[in-house]
Length: 297
Image (cartoon, rainbow, N blue to C red; front, side, top):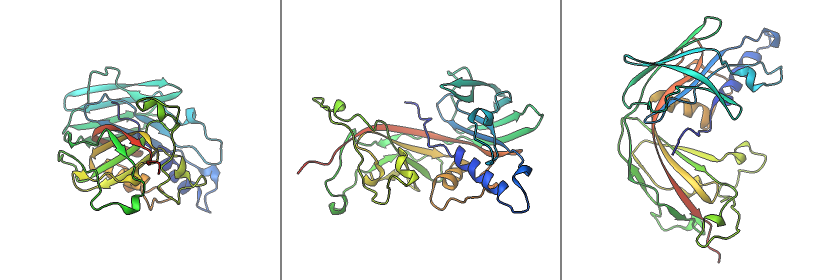
């Protein structure tokens, strides 16, 4: 299963940067200076793919996705003596850099460095050391029955999961809905019942931006965790993943995806020299589970 489907912080960071650069009263919007941006995640045992090289845009003009991307940069990724020249590819209207030989996979516990030479001669650099592999010890159950009342569960009423201890200082837990429409078609025998929300977070209403996201994130400091029912936004097919990140990825996700996010970009968010953004890495394991709706009373 391919794991490269994160709720990406790209728009969040670019938005924070734009606010910072245009908020000062003594600097009119016409003084805006675009900033080069990198977002690259290397996932252990996956191809080198989905690397963004972009430039920020002023908030005083209509946002154009194509204008943000830099398709003609020279992007070189190295690991020891190995060199990988990345190519810009557009799929489904989205441009990304990747290494064309998909048989080449990201290695664990390896130092990778990236050098990006932009058309104007500017250079961006960053490094990451990939974490050790992790694997399931006690994986999530394939089928979960959502409790009738999550406030009246017998303690401890947790479906505990665990995985091998890698060398990450903390782990990211991701729960992502895979199908918000289909439900009955996956039952045996199949029915025409459609999917629905678990509605376990009462303050998430349609006017809340998080209402429309498919993913919930969490962080744990040990290599085990309970199944938290509130993590599931939808019944039906869900993906439960553990990300064992390097430190830059962990800090980047906390800064851009977690509570207390700043509206201003800060240099410590980034590990990129000559620009902003991130080169980070992780080992990822996933398991698809099916969450049954509450039993009818």
